[in-house]
Length: 325
Image: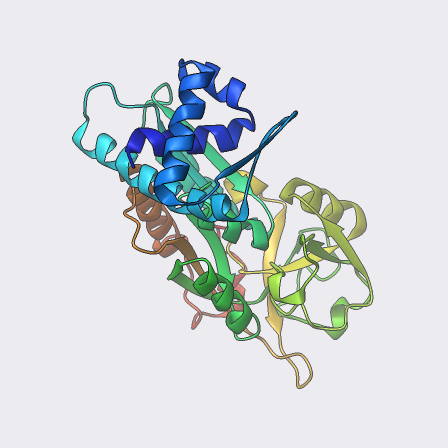
């Protein structure tokens, strides 16, 4: 087995066709087919099923591809670290729940590198896809949160996919709304006071409460609207006096200064909860230089004393937090 063969397998799976992969790799189609057959014989498995429309991975092939991607990614990181001549164009991708602090850190990171030498990608997506993107090495890093409610289910998903979760910051629930909202002037807001207004939720692929991005997702909401992006959420906050529950860390630079986070006030039936926000990576993987820089930008951004207000400060000060989701 060679790195070249691993590269071939990864490329074929992306292209879905031997002919297209051969053209992309600048080799003949018979040579590519022969290389794959030799690898399949060596491994004792069938990696691809051939048909008139191209190729598809077998179950064994899909499992092998995950390992191949992980090995080849580490090889590319070595090329990057030691700047070996003729290295391939470097890639860096992040998948995240809808956090503007993740975008802010990404912008700061990209600005430090020559974009002609990198393929950068930032994917704001569902919780399930954040996990799958990192599990399949589509993204090097994933950003999401754990709570007492979802921890058991989500961490099992991590374990099944050989992922490691590293905490970044803990936050309690805040009500995120437009400054013109009737409740915007309150020191804190209870669940009962929100009953007349629509609650916004990011749509999840599998519909499970455990994968919800919003803390306290199991409460009994009378009015709900599901969306897929932050820009739509902001428009609905203004147009419908809608709200969402979040970490309370707001990026005015990205979201504008027309929105605020007011502390959520718990009661006997609707208790507050801690969002443990962190990042996931593939177990035993080595972060690329860009990955290390991105994590450093995240930490600096979240823990900056000018932008992060600790939980023990007053509720009034908490409403002025200025960095993040």
